[in-house]
Length: 165
Image (cartoon, rainbow, N blue to C red; front, side):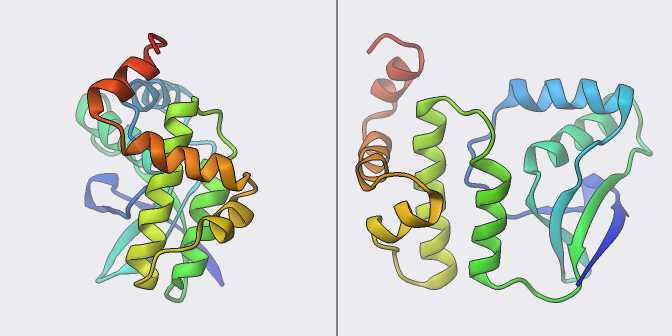
């Protein structure tokens, strides 16, 4: 079961996100939300009396920015599970939220790596590349290449993101 709550974004917790933080994206969302409001709910659960966000981390960060810059009373709309979410459900929510967004190949690779790490953290064991590929609808070679990409030195990854390599 789910319920919708309105929360002070500064008092929410952010669960690990498979999508890398993009400050420009947060800024763009904040400008939009400040003018037209929040269109899409975040998704989360209650954790130690606070709302923990599992999907919509960029919206949460945009709402915090709105509170700091323009409207300290801005509230974040969150669809909250009425019972604890299983690791499998959290991963499914993360996938649904993040992998349908347009991401650069570098962002997608970092997202796949973060998802891999999140599954490891939540389940206590690493998923196979085959299982992960099946779960996210990508080829095994895409998953393998993504995990190789994130193992490159940061300077090399930056050059790839900039289109120099």
